[in-house]
Length: 297
Image 1: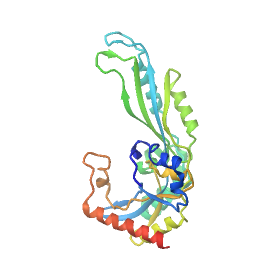
Image 2: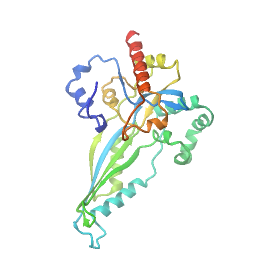
Image 3: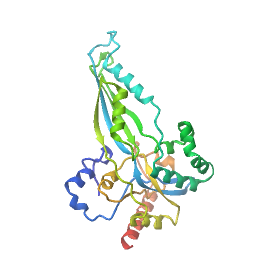
């Protein structure tokens, strides 16, 4: 299935199809989609990361209003200044670290495979979190799935440098842990920003249960992929259409059949996004073997 708006939140694509035409998915045994988290080091596949759970989006637009004027006026309480000050309060708040059950399983599986320092760090994870040193001690790839993140991704104010804008706006991409309370997060954002700012929810996603690892589709992935490298039930910080299927009780697994190193993955969403042709062919062959293994089981 291919839809047009997965990168824009999926409400008009997979979300709409599941709402408007549930009969198309009646009896679906499982869904295989994008979103895996493989690890490749020096051309060696360390593990296959099969996405079984993911963070949830909370996209916000924040608006600040004030009097418009020429930029020569010595006003300090402008819409733009008010917005900047409020955003500073928000982004300076230290994030709370929380280790959910699917994240703990994921990090533990990774640590056992990689061994050494990573295994030692995982065994000390609760102590590191309790000490308040997690942000400076844990690798970014771990922190991504341990905090509710807030990123200001877009700002908009006057159209000219010599104008005090009567309206200034910011867009915030918040990614919540699978078991976070979105209403509580939103209430805290509003409290921190203050009463002068308007906060509009552009996209929110209700909780969805993680996909089980004893499902026949996951087991087919393990049988086919495990010949080459261990298979790990991953939690990812990105969002995909998988959440729409999980919300309806359909087991869904994010799988990347390609084995690209981190520098090759940097091209994702970048200018001239590309993949080597031989890797594309290998990935198609791997995907075909997984589907055949599931169907004939």
